[in-house]
Length: 347
Ligand SMILES: [Zn+2]
Image: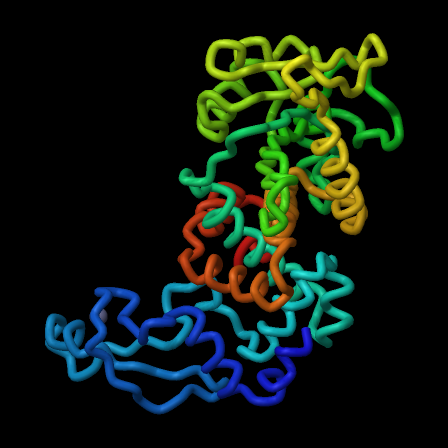
């Protein structure tokens, strides 16, 4: 985090640094996209104000003002730009809200809001990006994560059952309804022959259940046709024979890896390793709500896929990704859950 130090002392420097990441080719109006903008005086927190000349002319007003943060997820935040830089640096270290609050000297509720905004921004721009596809050698597996209605006693009551009993294994395949939502993991193995190859690229999707009907469209969208596709012998994956070179290891028979006659290594060990990393990460939140599970998982997915880069590059990639959203996903989410505390979702 050393490269952040110069910006953490000065509101204006922090705002300038953030602006450079948002608009590397020069400031444009977030409403109309025009570059015909003029700088005005700064806000108290260091953010630069701009006037968009075409927008002002169109509306017949003297000015059409916007700031560095207009139409970004930071727009309604009271936190100063330099505080945000610190929080994002700590977010990247995979800390939870309590730890971020202590390290950045902000309130825990504020830290909670910040991580929901950041995780939500990454979910919307990175996780949901339809252009991201896996190819060559792809492993698939599923795991189950305990997640309930943390922090929502009324929601627990509504479900008309006892609170989830911790540490008790339920019989059969768990579902979101039984308090253990499945997570589908798809991972493209790293190209071992190329030293500069990026980290193994992963795609993680939190599901309601693991029926074929649920996972089939996800695999079709995320794995390129013709890829080698490795799973265990669980029958939900049988449909993949049509589009992929599907090979299975028989965990039931004690087989965990084998080398096929054509030299292909058949195993799901890359994905198994990923699960222990994800579990370690999710354990930091000490009980996790189903409402936020997919957001936390998206942060893990993003940071994992960027982990071959230098810390600075990942930090800047985070901000570029975050600045490409307006927070619509989070607003919709807050709206859907309007009977739940909004402060936890947005603003
Ligand atoms: Zn404009």
